[in-house]
Image (tube, rainbow, N blue to C red; front, side):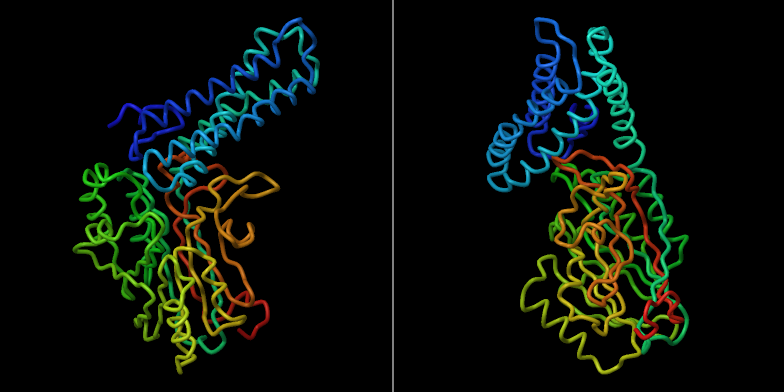
Length: 406
């Protein structure tokens, strides 16, 4: 274990030079803290009102381009590539520290040192800002392991409404660099659900090679537990390196699909799966979808799945497909009440990328919020978007079908 694994709100094991990145985060937070205190407490003493608080926030915001340039340059120096990604997630991490560490620290100093200079509105702002600290603790240490099971009924096309319902488990974005009770609970929940088939839309492990070598046997043991009458199916995600996936899946019943169509039979019903590669905007993926849509038997259940949920946009409106399944977004990982996730890294509208069952151009789409969370240079947090395992029931009765025809 690297000493930086013990830093609050960072847990940086598994990224290039975590000491350097941790030092950059600490410097950024301390600089912002000093800047805000200077703006608020500068002499000569004057009342501290909401206007002064807003000025301090503006001063910190003005330093963001400098932080971005430093993080971006460091990311390129560390890896030679991916500086922009380093910069994006590093900036999110730095902003998170400002919210959950700098903000309550400044509020506490203001209440203890400059209480008499605070106007009533500024005092109220300071008291409210103290809440950022427990929110940060909850988002980092509590919610990321509060696994929930989402059960959703999915109507199928009218032509496919024959036979018994089919249970499909979706295990998306495990995205871990260790095996803990959280990961074990997720796999136990799959076994308890007794699904007819299991879909794994990518992102199994995220971390450095050293960490992978340490945990691959435990991950392999977990993945070997997955089994279902209709099979277990996997498509590559953003953090899945091919040689690591091959090692993790060794000895398991999991089959990889890359621009491939596979048939399976469950409870006397034919289920056709179309698995797309991660970068599916190409002729190979389109030919695979054309092959799926040209199949002659309309009574078979057809499922498209890919890591990125906007694969649904490759389908024509009202396509002869029962469901598209994706992951990738983690539901945004953070959701603001009455607003939703600030970002999802997905071209779909936020309300769709936030997760759950939706209709998109007449096609049903399910977006899993995932079991894990972003690692590497990103803060390892979830807030109001708990991790989830999904159990979808493809309903031949068409319950809840809005138009009664599909």
